[in-house]
Length: 208
Image (cartoon, rainbow, N blue to C red; front, side, top):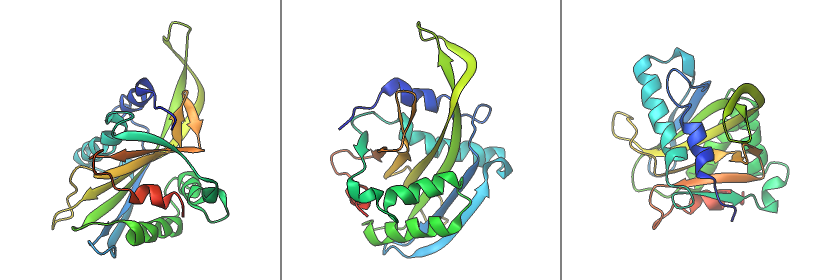
């Protein structure tokens, strides 16, 4: 298993403020405990109120800000994920569409509903963002010029109450992995709130 560089994750979280974020869109669905969809949402991040922006950024930030290589671990996609219609192709399509393709999102929600085990209602949140990766000098000082743009998804699976208010994520992921300050679509970073009792369903989904 490839280790995650903590500084690279902090590099992402430092941009997760209202003034600095490049988050473009938020989408997701509400599920009952049996995995049936109760409703979906899909909206432009810029159209949210300041309070909603702050709330959603705080939710998304939990995953990259978690303890690396303990709560957040890096996994390589198996060969089965590369076939036509495989999970890697699905996630790549969701990312490339910037969450604007509801049909692809619905496929993912269906997979989650079939695989995820829960004794309570929950929600699947998707966040789409970009990061202009600044060049760094040999002494690691950032320059203004950007070498490339890292486009990525954060997914958070959260318990919800009767008013559909989300709690802290139980699990989730970042795709593609941010590795050596560039994207690596062969890897995905999976988050588990409880590293002792992880939701292995996310790892099984990689086999779909």
